[in-house]
Length: 150
Length: 161
Image 1: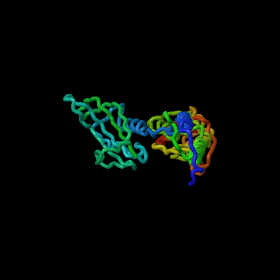
Image 2 (image 1 turned 180 degrees about the vertical axis):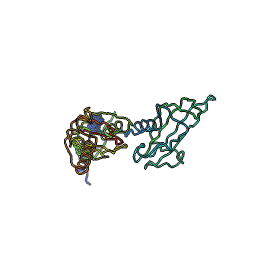
Image 3 (image 1 turned 90 degrees about the vertical axis):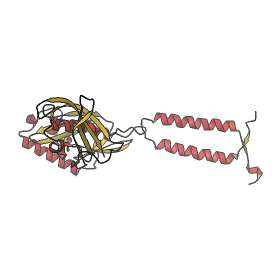
Image 4 (image 1 turned 180 degrees about the horizontal axis):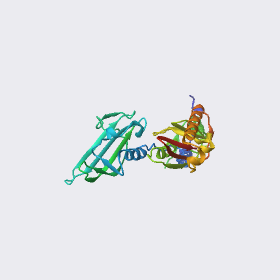
């Protein structure tokens, strides 16, 4: 390349031009921020908790002489989703105790009491209180936990 | 202070021009409105369909077009198209039968149909029609409304989009 093809550019002018470009891109990105990545996540755990609660309780009480495995059928569970259900309460010693638990695969088929490994980080949880009726007809408060994942 | 620095001017001009044209292309490629939120639509339908008793749910959307079959709903506008699958039950699109639409918007089944059998027959016909029209975009009305109706042992999820 000969010396005559070379030129000199004022760095100040170039810096101002690039700054304007960066500012324009920033304004554009800000204006369109609501256009990008605005889709909701699927919130299956909410209806799943309601559906499961309604099917395992009678007048708001879970009869501990039954089991989640016996009571729940595939139609009560979210289609194509693995579901881990647990009913627990805190005893007088402050220890959390499990009344019943069940893990169903994406077909709604019972697999085992709980998953072999922890649900993935993308799993969604929800819980609500319920009353557990013991065989002695005594009742106590507990909590129904539902975890759902792909 | 000396701000002077040597640069090959024509290389800089061509480079900046290429970057500018690329950014312009990206900017023009963006739609001014976001695509519709099919996941929110499916969440709404699942809130109604996932309840063990009769339930209703509504969601205002910005889709101009939609199609749905018994388990999937797809929405489209100038911003793009999205699709989601419901997790509970099967949907019945009410735009095939005005009586189903009336039930969705609060009319009792007994007022629109002479028997439960007639209602369920209309449901089956509408579901078959939506399966046949799967993928055919139809105009949307701006609001998704879902209602779960229990007739005998059968759960029906009526949906309007």
